[in-house]
Image (tube, rainbow, N blue to C red; front, side):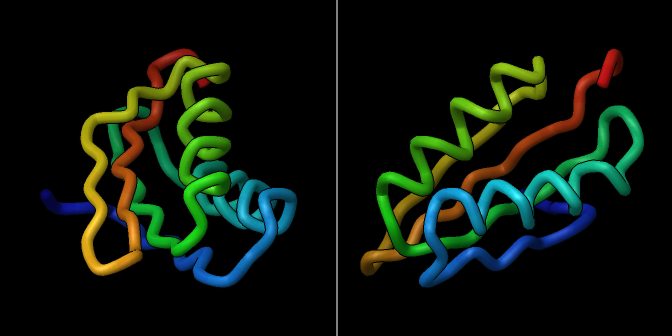
Length: 78
């Protein structure tokens, strides 16, 4: 999957990761996609919950070798 921006949140706490993802998503226009890469499963879960709470779409999620990638598409109303 192709992303418009990649956000690296490896080795971050949930709060740090959400702040970084939020800043990155703020720079995107409706329909663009951010790929969030990290290592902690609690961060993955929080990023997905945060995205859905803002009505962004979690379009894909993958985990390999202890690292995850979540693709989030910005909503039209964001």
